[in-house]
Image (cartoon, rainbow, N blue to C red; front, side, top):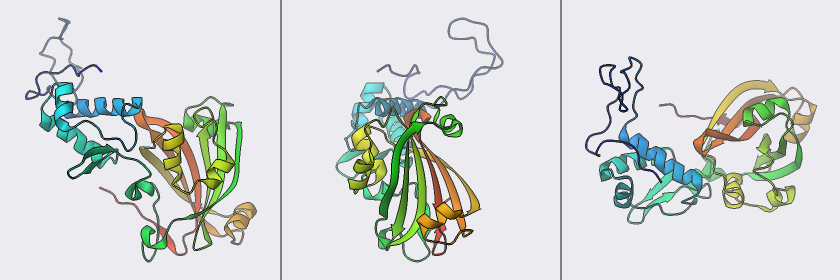
Length: 273
């Protein structure tokens, strides 16, 4: 892997070189010279590139800070800062006395990373895991709006999964999930129905896909007859509609999820900072 083109570790590149400096190749100075990212951000990008390439799988130990510092020819402190950011992004997990591991959706504290629907009393842990019922799993040509959001061509193959999530045998969420057909070739209704772990953990284990971030859009809607029947409510019942686009490494869109949430005894919770 190529090392970043930077000065020595103790002298990070300038944040925004002025037009008074000539280009490194002798070209005339430019008043629109680009801003240079901090050295630790460059190291973070190189580590992300290795994660994306599969050099370290979910659950694997990554090299120590000292080994990475030698690999990238930077200080250990620079590597530590890069790993700190990766840990804050839930991409790696530090374990005292054991090292740093690639995060996996199979871990308890990450299983519900993107689920923001919480019970009004108690917590996700106290209410127990969701009971899942797969309604259908089918392959079809991508509708134009789905193809656009997943970065596909209209008509490309996609997999559509519809399921109902219940808590204590009471339906709470109706989801339609759209996945690129080529990436998830081999995923079937039987596989989904028999797997008892988190869906994202299944994506990691069987398809090498890890969701690392998501963008959500929320709005209020009312249940039509089909939605009402699946959620055991009356038509016209108010629902919270949550559309989530999840990305894997390098900001590649990998899943479009449209959920309808019942909020009589639950609420949507998000922390802003």
